[in-house]
Length: 305
Image (cartoon, rainbow, N blue to C red; front, side, top):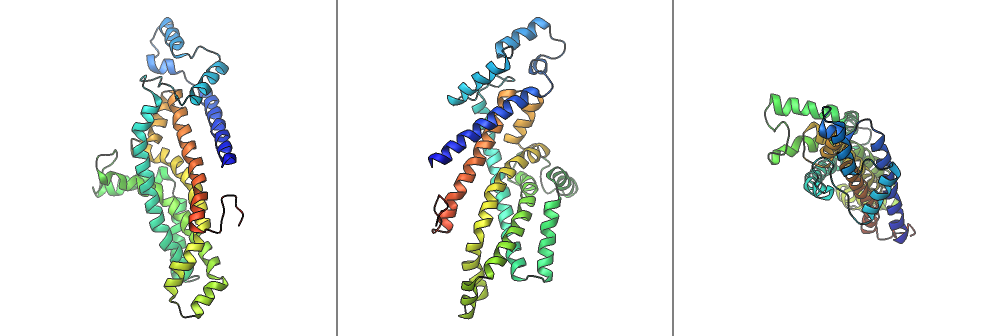
């Protein structure tokens, strides 16, 4: 656990360092974005000094690392609010969207994968994998506007954007969960096919157990280990894809906040958003190991049986 904690800290420091220097290389000046092109030079310099942007880049980086170690993410350059407060305001919307997308993905992927594995080589198998391929092939920035055009503008079933009601989450969750469902369905199929070829499965069937019982209660549980691995890894991609999806649907989450902050050159907020996403990603991957232990008690946290 100490090794994992040390690895987590190194990862977060690397992310903070990379994002800090990359965001400062982006063309544009936050002072000009705040004051406009017509502001006087003296006013620009005064604001730059107040915000600490006139310091050398190495000094700014050192001050930022000190603040991070003190659990202080800094203050927004744009509205002078603490970055932690802005993240806490937007985090519930992103968490709600990610949970809904994950629920849709798992609900679609597991039945599709099981049907394809049980009916290998049949029309059911081909159809399930066609649906999976269709989901993988559609990028979020295309699928989102198409869903808006169909269900919001033409049919009028859901809101176009925003977080107005419970139905507002349907289209962004489907957009975000479609590609994940496609990848998971293919993994469930391949993993379940391998498990169904094991001796204990053939023995259970030979003893007269119902095929559905064998598949759902015995084979699927052992087949879920590689699926859990993929699910943990894909959750990071889910959060990354939320940046595009939240922008398309004007969803008030961390992703849209980061895009707005990049446009405004609000360095502390951008760094805070990326740091939060990275922290969630590494924590989810660490939690995946604990889920392994729950699914299969033979597996230890060190990977030795």
